Amino acid sequence: MAIKPGNTLLVKRKSFRYTLILLLLLLAAYAVSNQLLDFKMPLFAESYVLPTLIWGVIIAAVAWLPDVQPQGKLRLRRMLRRLALMCVFIALLGMMLHIAMGEFGKNPYDRSARGILINLVSCGAAVLGMEMGRAWLLNRHFGRHPFIGMSLVSMIFAVFSFPLSRFASLGTGKALIEFLGQEFLPAVGQSFLASYLAWLGGAAPAAIYRGGLSALEHFSPIIPDTGWVSQTLFGVLAPVLGLIMVRLIYGEEARTIRSASREDSHLAWTLTSLAAIIIVWFSMGVFSYKPKVIVTGSMQPLISPGDIVIVHKIEGRQAKTGDIVMFPHNDMKVTHRIVAVNNEEGQTTFTTKGDANPSPDSETVLADNVQGKVVQVIPKLGKITMLLRGDI
Image (tube, rainbow, N blue to C red; front, top):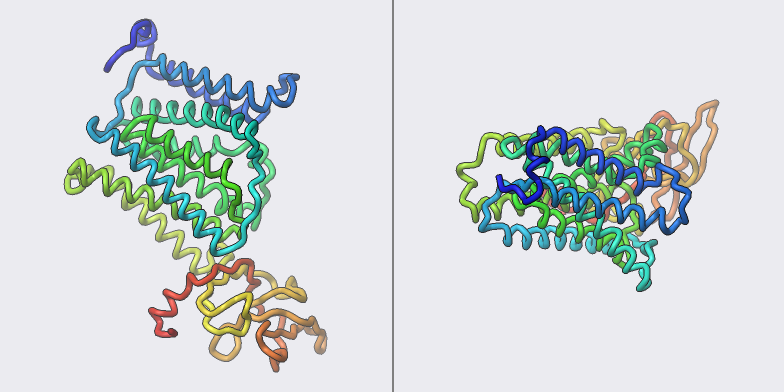
């Protein structure tokens, strides 16, 4: 291990000591960045100046610590940086596709010259400090155990990306599910990809990837403004595709695909298995949300054939006028809008109608037969299923 001048005393200590120092500095940066401590300072200084300073301290501290070498090949470091840029490009394409398929909103971040400069400095220091810390921890302690290290470090840094108040405000049920899908799972995916890049190539490729994501978030004039389901889909898909791309291209260049370690195989199988389990659970409605492919045009223009609707299981009596509900009719499931709530012989029933139909449905729907309420529409994604089933 290469040792920097002036680090002799530090190297004599046990590794957990300066690892603990680094973790404490990261915790301090988290506390300061989220204003968990009251320093009685002007708002600008507390929000931007102080966090930038403490991230600068972390950058200096990691630079002062003993060098640790990434696990990837030295000759492929430059290629890893290009792959990190390609991962940012995948995220950009995903965001553009997401915007094209739904609605978009104005970016709330200040994009004036002053705002851009402030964000460049503050966010740049945070990204560089975090990725230098990530790379040091991974390669110092988990060089031979990447799956354990990347899982642990990725989860810690994903949690660090949210203010403590965000966790404190979480309730149960739908709010918790939406947070996990819309925010937390994408953050874990991005963190895992950054950890993989850091394990292979050190802080530089990880900082390029995370810095690129931060630039998209802060400087894009528009951002997707769609439901949580589609945000989960695109938020998780981009880092997963990036991870697959990096692993395949790097493995091909390093000639390690056929001789991949057992732990790498465990990692691949674990990720695949978890993804399969989540998809199956979601499809079966385990999370009280279930997808359904629409094959008719009775709800156009809101819902077209080939669209997927996400149906949230609810008690029938919770449905109200204007809700789009799913209910059985003969041998199929119908998704129509409630246009009237009735009371027939002491039982609650609903009059339903397809938006594109000229008149309401001929039969009313018992409240007990309502199987769920449509909470999200994902355009066109179900056409693949229809093609496989021979519906088109």
